[in-house]
View 1 (cartoon, rainbow, N blue to C red):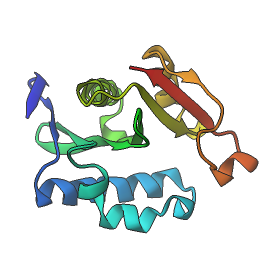
View 2: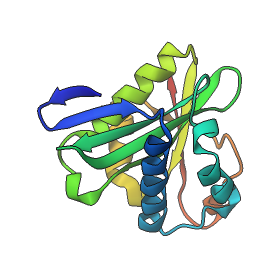
View 3: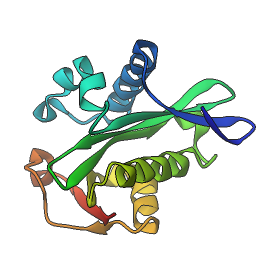
View 4: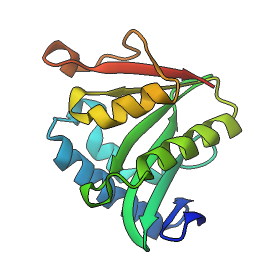
Length: 163
């Protein structure tokens, strides 16, 4: 685990226990989001986290506050030159501590280490704090990079960062 202050640490998931925690976090994120994710093959994603967000093409980063799971983010290969940031979530009890920023910086660093040229993501207005953080980190709005059916009923932001 990498420590940035005495109470906050993050690590890349590698064990079955790590991916169990990641699954718990992502399920909690989906409940918080309250948006149907079936179009993203969400059940298959949960069943294959270590494959989707594992080496050699991606990662799942978990954050802890005082040894309690506080948040996480996934990185997966989208195509040969692009990766996709997925499922950034910090439990509400840990908001305002810089954990989201820590996770985004860590996942960007990992994407660069893996030699991706661009990182893409999508988000919705409900996640405004994350959206503003993405803009501060240099992401810019792009045309849709996949068919998200929610974009027909709500605003969906498609963003990219040149790495």
